[in-house]
Image (cartoon, rainbow, N blue to C red):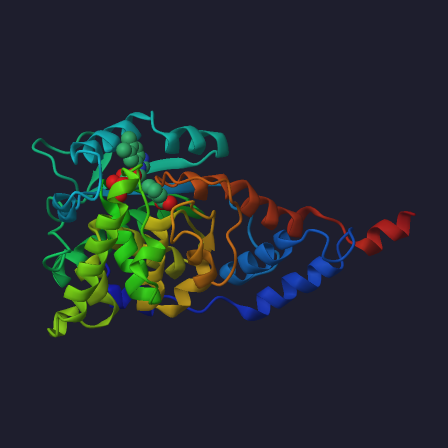
Length: 355
Ligand SMILES: Cc1cc2ncn([C@H]3O[C@H](COP(=O)(O)O)[C@@H](O)[C@H]3O)c2cc1C
Ligand SMILES: O=C(O)c1cccnc1
């Protein structure tokens, strides 16, 4: 079943503030000095708000969705890598040999890779979700990257994959991506949604020669000016911004976030690409914010401002700048622990009874 953006957004209810408060109260009475579990206490309360019950369920089936697509803006020389690397990485993830696979194995997460629009001549190989909308986006520096219909189709695809995973028992979604050139689209989205200066949010991505970073900043600036000057109805609003400046994988990740929130399941955000998608998802449906957990702070410029925009600092800062979902996956045990302490711990009253 494919749900529209409006249907998905309409199915999202605000996270439950009363369950959040009950969890904080419960924490205050557990067998520890109140507040001594630090940010894990607030995280547990957020999980209670997400599930609408306290204690919250302990996530036991995490799944990472790696959305993949190519980018027309690659023609502007914004990445040192050939576009073939995107499809090659999709195959690598499907075969289990990428960084995301190694870390997913460590934390017991399943990995699902979704091709929403890589450049490829042959068919999508086995083990990859074939949700191709088109072969790469248009060049966002010169024209809208996607039509609204293409953007909607990619959102629907991401939501469908997420819903299948949830139906199959996934109770914690993790966002990931691959797409050569996608740090340029991400910088454009972050600047558009936050008002940040392009130079503040544009970096070397996958090791772009540092002498060419000013050119990359200029491309982002050009794209923003092109979009700002676009007075068509399609260009207006959050969906218009996503279609104009984003990638197909950003749109698919918006779908994953909407579907997770609609099912009252936490969604862990990874680096600057999934973070840019998170800004779009929250712009489309503000209540989604209550379901998003910032997993880590990317070392890419723009990474630092993102978790704050999502309402709280990220859980980890390991100076990762890879994407794929790697940083978000590393936060999975923290999320599980935050829920588990609310279930497993005895109260201070229990302890003092036996003292
Ligand atoms: C081998 C390889 C594996 C990756 N895995 C994630 N990325 C990351 O780098 C790319 C974005 O950087 P840029 O905008 O500079 O092209 C995306 O594929 C992102 O997922 C990779 C990049 C490469 C080269
Ligand atoms: O933070 C990220 O997601 C990121 C940073 C650089 C390159 N690819 C991904």
